[in-house]
Length: 315
Image 1 (cartoon, one colour):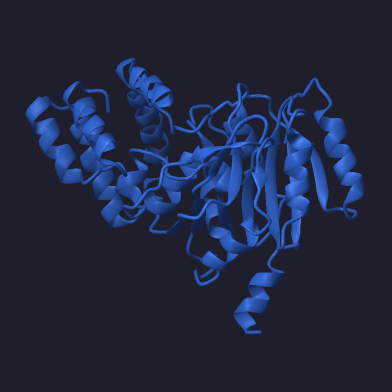
Image 2 (cartoon, helix red, strand yellow):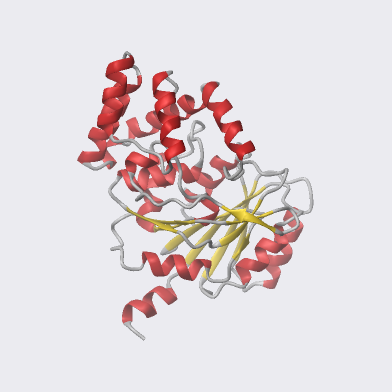
């Protein structure tokens, strides 16, 4: 076994899980974490005021694991994004790699191992982020499809327009964690995972998109954020676009990035400035500058939507 292989096999992963009234599916998720082929992990559960048996289930799992392997914390009760950032900012959570976890999925047994193998060649000082496609299942765990397959390379110009990887698939190194931690607990963060993609790609970090699904992503009526994989979901997002939600999200990202522009590469800082100027110009210069900025989405339909949004000043 090579030295690099031994190092990655022994690397400690801190799993950051946020819970809130998750009794329905939590045990399945915990069981899938316990079954991981990469066994050097700790689990940090931040509960946002559950009123069901979530904490009882988590406590039972804690007792089944080794002493000090599972930690139960109280969340800020200010939404899931801030709950995740609350865990990211916790100084007592120290590891080589970090993994976000939802409360209602089922991880494939090699999820952590695959992610670490894809990240092991990245130097420690370079931010690195792994994300993957997912296998969609219904509330009963029955297969209903796959998340969209993205073929264009990840990058900051894409990250400004969409998040290609769900947080439930994300694994990242300490340098990426430091970028997220620097943001702090900002109430205007749209989602923790989209922010991670923006910051890591913007800082010139290494982003890995795995086309092979790494978990069963449960779709049910309790999802706070569902998968954009059906026409009903796409229509809902189109309606949100016309209502100005996408522009509001971009406003929030611009506020965060304005405070952390020094962390971006020179090229990405110039891209951000071009995009910021373009958003508020008249129609023709707006379209020209947006084209010049190089922003893009992963699909033809998505890019057509960007053009429409640009025309009607919804970016």
